[in-house]
Image (cartoon, rainbow, N blue to C red; front, side):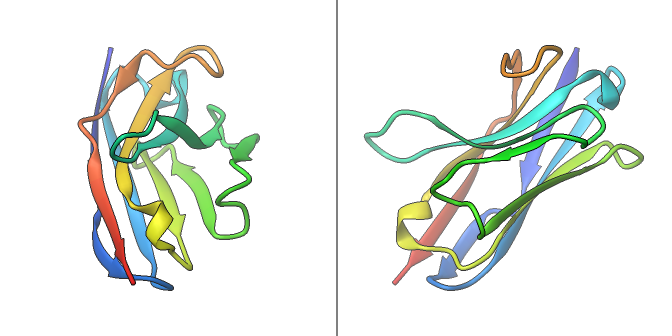
Length: 118
């Protein structure tokens, strides 16, 4: 089992940047494929970016491509989401997730709020 804790959210003006972190504890971090998801008020949760166990394969959703970068540090047991050129439509609660099978996520963090103002 793994425990996930997100941090780094906050309020930022449009065009600004934030870096989210997801710290993992418990079972070996490299056991898990990892991902970032987000959910805005009144909307369904959507996948933002995913990364394979050793970082060789990444996926970034089209709506953030070129602005967001996913990475992981398997020594620090931490995953990151660098978010640049933020837009108001990026406002959401961002969740990190872990799964032993790619695209199937069994463990979720509590979420961190990202708010982008005009």
